[in-house]
Image (cartoon, rainbow, N blue to C red; front, side):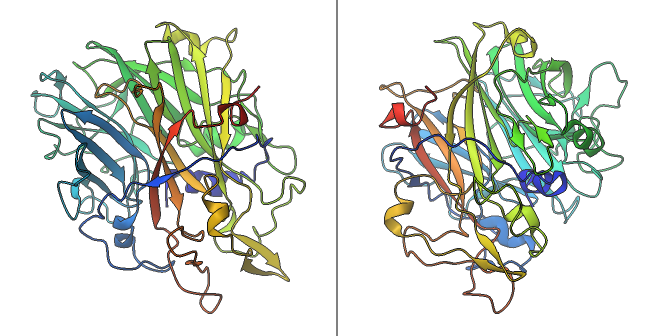
Length: 447
């Protein structure tokens, strides 16, 4: 289960948010080849290896004539591939494993964070003292991270295809041992549900991460806090995070749970910075109720998946900082909500105590907006800065759940329990891309 779905399940985030009107927003399947362990079909009860078909969180940037794509696979793998910018051809079929944690913990789930690449070897791995040109941050969830949504791990590479054994990240000033193998020993020293960031220079790395410790997340769900931290680190000690503070909740939409519980958590976040306009951008996804006028969970008690099966929406935020990233933790500053994307249809309804699929959507309706998603990530430069095309648009990757009618066949391909509808996929996802701001900008942006 992804960090997002796990966190939503445990916190009980049956959320309500004001829906912004959606313009026609055309998405295009990325069609990154599946991983080595992907079979032809995955069902609800299939093992985690099925999820090599999935594309969850991504990290992408262009190097020369090729686009590098890294993707979480909703299991212990991070997949890697390259796409030719001229022909659209992929380098490997199936995709490669950049990270494979099966030998460490066969139950593990990985959520990708950020991948950075430099032209020279500047990232120092404390496990061997060597310097590397590539670095990866990701979230590890497994038996070594009990009672948490995961912990931060770091891996290194010189070519982008062969990666070192990951190590735990640590907080500065805690005395935590460095270079411990990710997924082993006690829980990781930096618990986090998600992590993402960027370089502002060759010497400064800026990271944003949502707290992963459930003992802190649960009581904070009733407080006016994002529980999302801004931390800094450097290429010389990239596994050591110095936490600056908690980013401000000003301007962040309150997500409401029935009974009055609220939170402003940046669930499954993605972070980037645009030096051209001096703005930090944060993206998140969140669970939404089926009916905006009904805050009660219609299916939570009847469905084994509970609220993990609720639809998910995504939001874009920005803040003007002009290089002073400490402003993100200042109580005198505010985030701007740029867009709230997705839909509120839901997958199931409680019919006499039995979960049943909602009426099928049509192909025409699906083509008009983004359906249920599990992540939003932005295409960036090799150092994590926002990449814009000649028209000023950013390329966004949305992980769209295939328990919706697929555009190709308009066939409902998911079932929760045996005998309830056609078989199909539950964990599997399709990665789509779209340009933001899209055509009809005024219909998506907050006015």
